[in-house]
Image 1 (cartoon, rainbow, N blue to C red):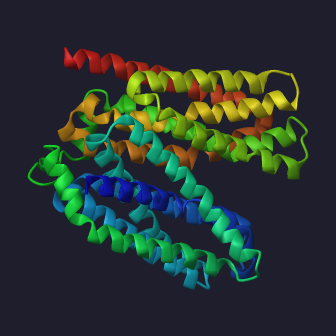
Image 2 (tube, one colour):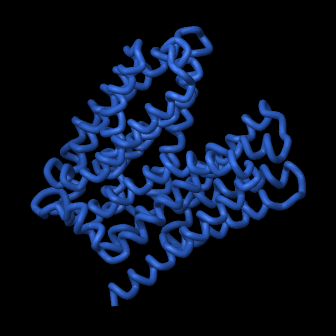
Length: 391
């Protein structure tokens, strides 16, 4: 039965990724009929991101009151309702309204699931689960494209993902006894019951939390900036044709997804700390290849290499949380980690856009390098703090 729970968690991670790519793939077909500027996609993105930050910070209290299984089921249900709202919307203000439960549902399920897996399963499962999240991120846009190319409209694309989320919601509610059984067998049931919530203020005061928050912010800043601006860089700076570059832009995400699959086979042996170091080293090699003036092939391989390097960092940092800060504090710490990640995801690509507009897109690899160095310094400082605390 416990293996069945793991299957459900894997499906949940696919579901977590399904809505993430919908707005980007549908917006070119949405803003015209909605009679709004193309830039209004940023408003929806900010509303959704704001909701994820708030719900990630509230997740500890929710999990201790309701349990991970119920929080996950309710969060997926909220996301499903929001997707239905998107599918039925005919005005931009309606999309803004539905963006609120969209973000609130996503943040809670992300923080709750990640903590549950970090507490109850080995590092390899965290890598593979985040690989499955990448599968969901890829499937969502393909589902949207299926309906758009058949002239059925973006509303049907959102409705199709809503239908999948409803099915998962039913499965999650039926599986609630499995979540409780797994927590009890692992001896961590108190994580979701009697223990008093630590709270945001006290969580940030824990030694090493500030360092890990900035590390997460740096990682997600690097990932999102690379994912959003890599194609523009190879078109404007390297001179590749825009249509061809768009196809090669998927290399970065392919590197992340494939990298997480293969990372699962070695993460238990190397350990979370060394996997993060390995990832940073591979990213460094990829950025160097982007820098080198050896032609387009070198740049594209460098982009793929950066994606492979990104693969183990996020899941291994999360999986290390109970070991770094203790099982009782892990849910609270993962909540602030997720919030920091969302802040980096939301703000840093925009900041790079402003810088690139003034300085030039050629600063792209330099910008990534600065973030990478900061991430390395903070992650190593975290390791030093954890060693001192455990002595």
